[in-house]
Length: 374
Image 1: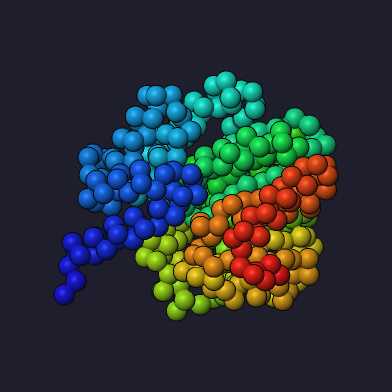
Image 2: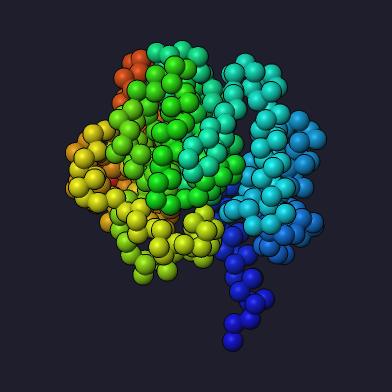
């Protein structure tokens, strides 16, 4: 017989496993995270004390904040609100994450980069983004957005790269995530058009190139159908059609993913998600360059997604890795691969393209599957 306590324990175990993947992507030491996770006894978002999910992550973040390590603190707070805000505890983590980042960008490093906070209203809600390198209307734009659990603050390393990339960089959030007040569902893609509209004249938005991961990749591709300013998309594990159309597959994905989607869609997952599926005709109509990283053991997005992409989008390429969703064990491969694609599509200076292209080639030679690039 399954009890509430058993269900909660199972959910906590799943959260521990999943957050370790995200912690790795954020560069947090695994041993440190395991020690912290061992102190957590409840996954509930209402709690904010010792032994609670948000309480332990926030306590670590508070200690780092006191030492002036604001971006490290920000990473801990971001995992304290993982996977979404469901009560006062995770809300405190969310607020602390934003506040720590804001303090960092107002400090010496952020001022040197000119990291700006942008607030943009659109018909479905309000979004907030961080941007660096704005001001030159001839500079192409790099749009960065994550998936259903990724807050914009985690993209600080790419904001720091704006001068090296020779691009303006803006980090945004999926509707319903972080400070983005809109809901995730049909029409949510228009948020990115509103963001580009707000940046017109401060960068060359007619040459927008996106690093859009997972569900963010899907939404930016949907936006590109209506907004020709998006010239290329580099993504990892983006659902395109099969995920949205197959309720049996969705029932197999981790409980955390299902609960998060239900939260983002206001409990209308089974009604909202099928409407988000991209058709083969829509995909064939995409006039842009697409790079897709797929994982053989993806527990969230079926491999049929990358097959659909390669069959329908003429200017597409794929890299297939032996990993789980998001390819967290292959970050040394994935990051330069995505950046090299964006720089190539943006026709960046040859020196910049050569640097990231060399990093990508070296990493792939060391860690990618033989024949994994297609």
